[in-house]
Amino acid sequence: MTEAKHLDTKDFDPKALHFVPLGGAGEIGMNLNLYHHQGKWLMVDLGVSFGDETTPGVDIILPDTSFIEDRRGDLLGIVVTHAHEDHLGAIPHLWEDLRVPVWCTPFTASFLKAKLVETGLQNKVPINIIPLGGKASIGPFDLELISLTHSIPEPNALVIRTSAGTVLHTGDWKLDPDPVIGLLADEDALKKLGREGVTAMICDSTNAMVPGTSGSEAAVQESFKELFGRFTETRIAVTCFASNVARLQSIALAAQAHGRQVALAGRSLWRINEAARANGYLSDLPPFLTEREAGYVPRERLVVICTGSQGEPRAALARIANDDHPDVVLERDDVVIFSAREIPGNEKGIAKIQNGLMRQGIQVITADEEFVHVSGHPARDELVQMYQWVRPKIAVPVHGEHRHLTVHAALARDCQVPEVLVPDDGMVIRLGPGPAANLGHVHAGKLCIDGKRIVPLTNMAMRGRTRMAQAGVSMVTLVMTPRGELLADPKVTAIGLLEEDEVDEETADLIARVRLAVENLSKAARMDDAQVKEAARIAIRRSFSTSQGRKPLTEVHLVRI
Image (cartoon, rainbow, N blue to C red; front, top):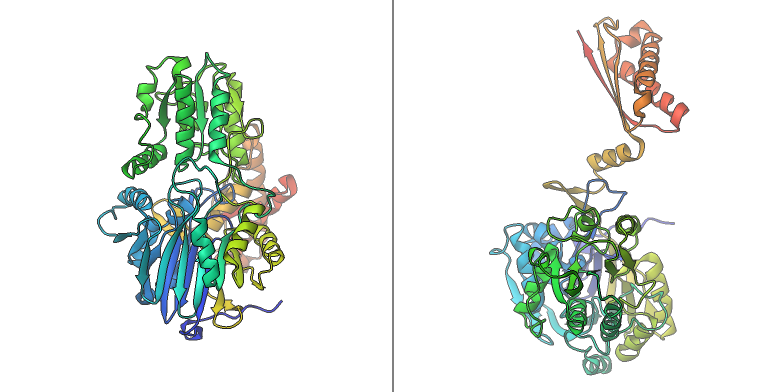
């Protein structure tokens, strides 16, 4: 396989329309999409993804924006399709490297402003509000929003019109006939756009492998009403994605139907609640109770909505499961409903919480047992419907792992789309004029928030931390004369490698092995720091490789006196 051509600014024809994903093509999350025309750039979304067991100490992963930072003078702004973290969560962390205006709808603006407070940018980022169904012109890009449905208010498809062609960038979406919160998908606008002619559709692939349709939120609401009616003497806790405002309404209305009050437990739920009510959503519901207020409500009259559906260790539900939440307590026979599907990679964390709850005699209900969740992304029948309405000349699947993109691409071909390209992060795709083409690649990578720093995910510190987590670490200190004589036994420390009852014996053996390795060196070698350190390092690693099958990260410190 030949290496893809690496492109620079001079390789971009200013008359053409280019699409360059720097995140979200080949993974679910961390969405960052660039459009280039007439020498100018437009960014669509700037989101995060989240760490897992392969990234110890890292909670948040960001797209590497260095390519567009180098062209910041030609970057006109960021358009945010909706308020999910994987579409706007990186703005508070990366905006100062870009320093451009943001365009979004009212609810998304409210949510973003609240997040900017956390990084002290609330008065620095220029936010331009586009009304639902509204239009804006940003340099050579004429934009129009088309309302869709999703699992958060105000999701938008973005129409990008240029002199080189028209793009429909769908963002995240589904076709919900009764979404509970917000507008229906604007079918007429999509059909009209299809009649006008669409050069390319850049489309959500999350559920491209799922047959049928994604289901309606209204049906979930009715299911909750029936389910709550089965439990008359116990507390009910429900965990869901905090951003799913329609789910909050569904749960609250089901609780009202059975004479229960509703409390929120978790900071992100309160943030979403505030943004929703500020924009007219949830207005028919009474204020939610705080966690402290929930403690005064009789057990059989309470529903608590909790963060933590994905097993997050610091979320409210994890603390409740560990019985260390300061205000919310669950007892034997209480009920916890997981109103969300697990995101791949979160299974262990979710199972840990569920096990903790069940050990306390608490009933756990998931979407595998009851109808308590519908996805916010289009299944195959909805994708087919969208292609029938829009009829693009080019299909570019995004927002998915490679398996999702590949299956989506095959579906687009079945829908008679003439040209289909499967991208990966950094790929430069010419959308027009003329045939679509993969022109090569630009730099794309991943950053992470490591304490107070933003660093490359693959930097030396992160690689070392991963090795330590996987194989342990050992440290050796040697004190020698300039002539190469040991003045004392080596000092050996092993972390994450030895059991408590074997530390003394095993450490003594390691000391002996290191001493022997050093003393077996020639006199000239013992006077060479590098050779001494390497002999000690190899002795430690060979010992652990023989006894445990591990090769720990090993550091050797040599002091000559």
